[in-house]
Length: 233
Image (cartoon, rainbow, N blue to C red; front, side, top):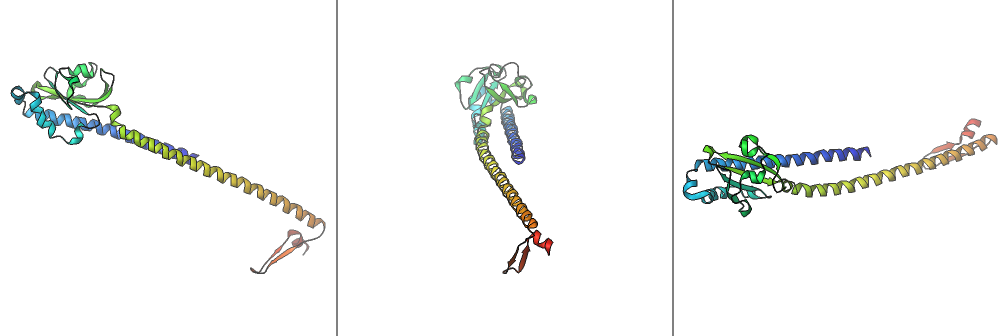
């Protein structure tokens, strides 16, 4: 039981560490995406007035790795007033919305930008998000990247179910084997006790009758004497 408990505790620590590593990786990825895009837009910011946000950000987003827009990750491009001008993947629900209308006014990322890092917050529609906002230089706008918290742990939850199932089977097998072992020990102890009682009674009878017995093992060349015979001789 102690072994199963220690194994469960060790596995629990490993599971929690994996979950934390996934969250840290998600924070790093969305900050890296936001920093990359905000820096690139800053270098071509003059094109925003002539070509518009859509045409400006399209090639920049196209240069990102395919993984950048997976697992529910969303990229928003906002102007200097914090109003969304473009979104990737495209979603009309964000059109012309202020970042504060999406993330709420009680969070620090729209105010402090990259200095606030990636934070966990509850959006105005009630979803739990990990989000970051990086401002474009000269107050030309901002790049916001966020990801639903539950999507980060999709693979982790699937692995967790598998791990718990395997651990449950392992624990049951170990407990059954432990029960079988102790049941066998109890039966062996009972047999030993019965044997000892029978031997004691036989020896008592031999001593009182001044009798004894011996056994000769021809194959191994060994003799066995009962205690009563040994005492007599």
